[in-house]
Image 1: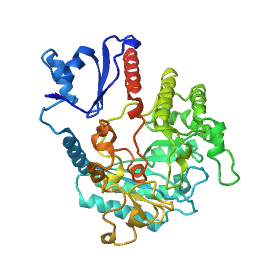
Image 2 (image 1 turned 30 degrees about the vertical axis):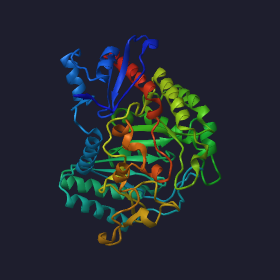
Image 3 (image 1 turned 90 degrees about the vertical axis):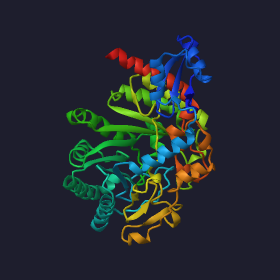
Image 4 (image 1 turned 180 degrees about the vertical axis):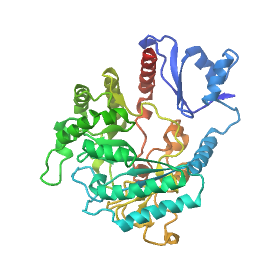
Length: 450
């Protein structure tokens, strides 16, 4: 046996009243342990005789200890390739509308008042059936409704969703959906319809910190009107209903952050607490980056600064009993949908892409980024569209992912960012010690509640 190279640890935790202990995290399994410092020192020199057998077995099960002669990188890559091929839920992203009410400065899309007509919806269905008929491994279908703003194509969602539901029922498949929406049109009655009739179980809504920031960025195209209060009212009205509290549908609030609004995030967290939303929604902190070559990331925080601020925000959420998303990463077998040949993005015109940031942009809307159009013969489709070869790019060593200890829980992160020359390393790489400790505190707090 040997200690896996794919592990991370905190420093010794003497200064937080855990003397001679540290937390170790296996990036091969996404599991962490609090352990005594002498045990860790023995692991470092592969000396296992002084470690209890039960502890040894635990370390083996989470892949902290692996076979001495194992090529760990090759093992990770093999698992990734095999798992990517064996995913049994067919997942498609559909952008039913090319329109959006908002004119956010960092959005790379060019919007038009177009939405998916009946003929395009039939082609969505035909393409999904094509995948289902060519592989019997699928047990479910998942749709991600994206945009533009998907709710500006509500009639298309209703029509397509009913067809997908009927298809899945006829084949004994599970059907589920998620939605990324600006929240402007998401009233309680519509929320209930989307959940109960169209099986949308998760909604991501963006609020860019407080109204002071949000209403200078996420404003309407028509008159640059503010939207913060309207969206917050929708969220509060929805989460106050018995329907929301008795169903498993969930709202997650995303905060897009750069140098111009990072100082307002603490106030926004306090606002969420004061509005009584802390346990009704969850928060995600996201850096603003370039989109389609629009240079939106010019005011972005450095990776280290974002990571430092993020842990402060997460700690503030913990102290105020507010839910947060993705504290510790899990084992990742593929970076994102671009690696899966059975995962595609369809826009309102029937164009097919590998990445949901490609449609409606000047940079990626055509050329090699395009797989094809649903109206065309499938035999004419581009077999090697942009980003689809990400696993081979990673294996080639043209990024530093091949030698990075975070690879099993990162997968290289966003292939599009790498493609654009912007390393996509997640914040966890820069603040994992603090996140491991915060995760430990949260788990201990949850144990106290039992």
